[in-house]
Every structure is written in C-alpha cells, then in structure tokens.
Image (cartoon, rainbow, N blue to C red; front, side, top):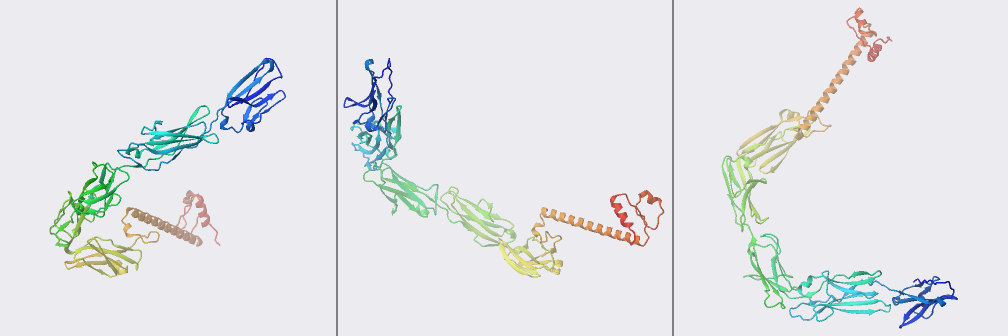
Length: 574
C-alpha cells in the first residue's frame, strides 16, 4: 500500500504515521520520524507488516481480518497535517459444494401436507460469505425462506477460526411423482476481485420417491407375430415405486408363475392362444385404480403338409403324373412345388406330362404363411420313372503315354437303379447324385485300350445301354505335365496349344536349314580337295566372263560374309 505526499516548501521535520481502527479507535501500526522509521509492536499486524523507505506498507501473509481501512497521516510541522485512507478487501474462493442427506426415500401421498428434507448443500472456506442457489432440471428454485411454502430453504453460516465462512443450505419440498425423473443440484455463488461473480456446481442427484400405483401396463415383449415354437415374454409393470408383486393367470385357465413382473412361456403352441391377465398387488393404491389388466395372445400355426399320392411314386416313361398337396393355417397361406432347389409351380397342384427319366427325383411341397415370417412346413414325394438306362454324354480319356492310369466316369439315369459293366474292367466305384447313378473306373491305358477304347454298359430289368469311351494320347504336354482334359475345351488353352505347335514348327525348320547348310559346305570342301572346284574372290561379272570349269559355278558377292566363305574355300591344301 503506497503513501506519498507533497509539501509546498522543503522541510526536514516530516512525520508519517500508519493507522488502523481497532474497537472504534485508531491504533498506530507503523511510522517514520526524522530519526528513523519502523513497525509498532503489539498490533494484529506486527509480525506480518513491513514498511519500506518509500513509506509503503506490505502485509504477508494476508489474513481475512486484514479486510479493513488503513490510514496514512503526514505531519509537516508548520505546514499542517494531512491523511488518506486505503480500503483493503480480502477474497477466498470456496470449495466445491457437497450434497448430503439426499439418500432417504420420500413418500409421495395425496394427503401429504408437510415438506420433507430433500438434501443439504455445504460449501466451505469462503470469503466474503457466498450464496447458495438450488436447481431443479437446471432451473433455479426461488430463494424462499418461509416454511409455510411447499418448497423452501434454511441457511446456516459458520465463521471458522481462520475467518473463512462455511455455509449450508437445506432444501425442503413436497415432491410429486413427476419429480422422480427430475435432476437436482446446487451452486455456490461467490465474488472475486474486480467484482467478478463466479459459480461452482455440486454433483447432480435424483430423488428417491415412494408412491402408489395409478396405472398398470401389461404387454407382450416379442416383436411381430408369434408362431408355434417361439418363446414369449409378457411384462407387467406399474407407474408406482417400488414395483408391487404381480399375479398372472390365463383367463378360464390356471394360475401362472411369473418373476419380477415377467411371465416367460417356452416354445408356445396354438393351445397357448387366449386371454391373459396380470394383477398388481399394490395395497396403497386408491380404490378407483384398476389393478388388473388383460391382453390377447395369438399363436399362429400351420398344419403339416399332406402330399398325394404318397411317396415313393413309381411310373413308366410317357405317363402323366399329378401331385397334390394341402395344409391348414391360422392365416392365409401359400403352396409351391420345388425340385433341386428350383421353384417349379406356385400352386398346390403339379402336373407332369410325358414323364422322362430326367423327371425322376424328389419333389418338395412348401406351405408358408406370408404374414408370419419363418412360419412354414414342407413335405416331399420321390418320383421314380421306370425305363431302360440312359447314359449321359461323358468325357473321353487322355493320357500322356501308354501304360498310364486313366479314370473314366459313366453317368446313367434309370429305374430300377442301373448297374454297370466296364470292358476292360478296372477299379470301380459307384456314387448317386440326385436321380443319377455314376460309375467311376480307373484302369491302365494299354495299347489295346488306346486302339479300341473302353466300353461302359448300364443295365436294369428294362434293358441295356452302352457307350464307348475313347482313350488317346495327349498331343502336346504342357510344361512336362499332363494337361487337364476338362481344360482342353477352353479357348485359352487351345490358343496356348496353337502357339506351342507353331513354336515347335519354327524350331524344326531352323534345324533342317542348318543341317542342309553344313552338308553343302562339306560337299564344297570335298570337291575343292579333289581339284574339281575353282573359285576366287571375284565379282559376279568376272565369273560370268571366265570359262566354266566343271559343272559348278560359285558366285561370291563382295560382302563380309562372302569374304569369309571365299577365304574358307581358297584355303591352300595342307
């Protein structure tokens, strides 16, 4: 705290004194005389006060009681006396407010006339004294102190030994049932330097209210239509707190055991359809409150599908087959026929005219209720068509060399199921895929097999059919390995084979040309040694002008290659 003065004429007889007020009287706390300066003993500030040469006062540490007026008085002898006052204000921010006594349950009743304590909000160690504000759903409650009101607050304040304030505000209310969902908290409002008003919020809390039932709710928890085999949950609850005990029953039926307001029914059937009731045993409810609620449970069903004629059905080729299926359901249903996972007809009547062996197989009639997802049943009938076997077009065999093993498949239709004879025979196995019987044989590709092939004969009591399988050598191996017979029909593989064939032809042509050239050179060399060949390094015109000796004329062009060959032919004899 600075203190400065101005005297009209210079003088050395100046006295400066600092004062405070204690019990309505001034008390000196520091001074400066011409002989020196210092701090007075025996004051509340003696141990914490320091006076500087510039006449300013410093207090450390500052305490709450230091919030007072300080006077600086200057006496300048004949020039008179003057003083000035400084007001010191002390601020201390409070701790976060804490909510207590808010865990007790409060009973809400129609005849309640007194308010109940909701909770206490306490904020400690503040200066100056702060203010507490209560909030409900983030809206401030009126600062009401009259206990005649339904909602009011009682404030208490304690000044600690440190001089700081601890304040507590207790909230009283006559809560209603809707307050069970409300959120409460309190705020401490305090002032800091420069007239700043700040706030600190407590944690939020809910009220624990007890109130009787006014409405009962009974519903099925499952979503969508219910079908046979489903698990069902029925839930009964009230708008009271706490929830009462519940009793379940099927109307015109027996009592049912539920748990915590929930009735569980496992794998319901059509017999579980009907009306159900729930009764809430709330003895505090008003007399006009309806504590019993009912609901209707509908369990959808579909009867097993009946197919005529019964399975298995045996007919001859060329006959007409009529299949019928029917069912019953709790709601509109559909029927459709399927075979090999394909839809055949969206109806319950299926007619097949001029049946063939290919018509044999398993026919499935599916009954479904579109309004109830997942509710469907099905039945099937096996159709067997009598007739001699029919052999499908199967693949021939390919081997890389004679003596290699080859595997062939022979697929046939027919009823009774055909049997097979392979000529020549090998290691045989039989599999059934749908209405087809497939015989697989593995045997050695001998020269006889490559020449005559392999015969597959399928027969039953109605006749016999045969097919000859060709077994041939692969023309061009791919990378030294056997190519897959199934790939030989692929255009990509055909193109690769053509490219390989073309490459082989080029290689053969080059080899033949080199051999012919070597034979020609050897012949010329032989004739030269016998003296029957005369040639030299001449142009074409020179050779033409000379006399032809013998039966061979050699024309040498003046190229580098020609010079090399001329040198070879004119090489002196050893």
